[in-house]
Image (cartoon, rainbow, N blue to C red; front, side):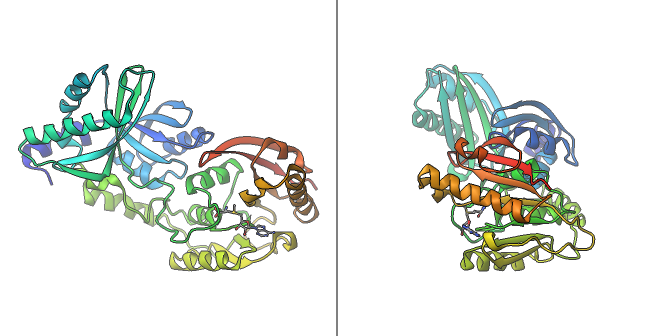
Length: 394
Ligand SMILES: C[S@@+](CC[C@H](N)C(=O)[O-])C[C@H]1O[C@@H](n2cnc3c(N)ncnc32)[C@H](O)[C@@H]1O
């Protein structure tokens, strides 16, 4: 806890007023993320939605809630300053003028991640070095020995000589929910999987099938959603080291979230895969986090799969999410198209009335499904993907 005077300043300048914040989101999911922010229990003022991110104003408590509850974001930043700098002297002067003691643990020199565009200061490594030196000088002037703290990260964006300086509140990227200890073949990021479920209209009152589940990202995300467990419930965040952080307040936010958890009468999320080991690892994770009231896992070939029997309390048809192996992209086009046509034929044969969300790796595959679909362009780990969403006709 900071000393008396500093504590007062932190309350007055950091905890009290709304802060300028920024959500980093996968391109194509911004509107969903903005909607999630607007629905948080603490008020948030969404200012601008742009490609890959959302500017919003929020008090720290709302920023914590955003980290805890928003499913589609990649990370949340706290904007610290915006200024012009055309040379290193100006950059250092502006950086030393920031009251770092309000934001960082005593002496902390964060790691700096720099992007520069159309600016005279363009050498990202040199910019990062000068910022670190300025922060170290700030601490020395306060009589505190500086120390590198890579768990804290500053993001510097230089755009036409204007520097935007933000402190990362999340730490580990938010797609790391702290649940999965197992890897898989090309697992999706959890925040993208959550966005895909939302884009496809997932409703926990209806069954969900993830028949090429791999590491089970869709199934786990849907389980958290259906059980009303916030995605950040099982992990820590960088803001927990900030001098403005109040553990009791955080505990209160988590306790309130925990009161909303639901126990389900029977699983309505069906995960399956050809790969027995993938199924075993997913099952272990599901049992460890007591998600087995939401998800059932079994080894099965999608092309042999039949819809689950209708369950009391659930709609008879629901959503199928399909994320076929990316390795297929290496196949010649006709074989690749043939594989996706086979999927379409299987869906039409056995899943009439079901909503489908199918990830395809290229535009040549859009027309492979024998029912109407809409295409949503997405990006994942540098790859362009298309999400096809449609309903299998009766
Ligand atoms: C890209 S991975 C899925 C990744 C998953 N969405 C995740 O986030 O971990 C594709 C999966 O499809 C599975 N698969 C391939 N052909 C299958 C089939 N005919 N039936 C069931 N699973 C199949 C593979 O074993 C692999 O785990």
